[in-house]
Image (cartoon, rainbow, N blue to C red; front, side, top):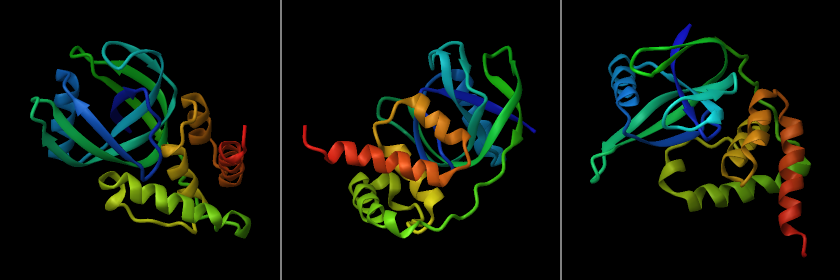
Length: 192
C-alpha cells in the first residue's frame, strides 16, 4: 500500500484528532487529492529536519483521514484529521513536488483492553480534561473503559517528550502505558 507522508513534529495516535494549518503547495495538493478520493495520508514523527523542507522520520506512524477543513481568515487552509490505523513505512520515494510517498504495511489493531479497576480514577480525570479541550474532542466517541483508547488520549494531552510518545505508539502494551501515565500523574500531584 502506498500513501502520501506528512512528516510532523507530533505523534498521532489511533482515533486522535490532528488539527493542521496547511500552506505548502505539496501538502495543499495532497489534502485536495485525499479529500477527492476519500483516502488517508500517513503521519510520521520527524527524527531530523523540520516540517518545512526535507526531514527524516521514524518508520512507525498513523494513517490520518480528513474529517473537516476550512479556509482561515489569513488564507491558510485549516484541516482536522482523525487517526486511523498504525503503520510501518518500509520504503519512501520523494516526488518532484517534494511530497514523500511511502510504501507501508498496516500494523495490528490493538484490541479492546478492559481498564483495570485500580485505574478507574483515570476515567474521571480524562473526562474532565477532554471536556475542557472543547471542540477538538467534542465529536469524538469516548470509551473510558478501554485501556487502549484511554491511554492514547492521555498520551495526546500530557506534556510528554515526543520520543516517549513515539515509543508508546510503537508498542502494543496498554498495561505499560497505564503504568507510565499513572507515574506521570503521581509526579505532578506530589508536593515539591
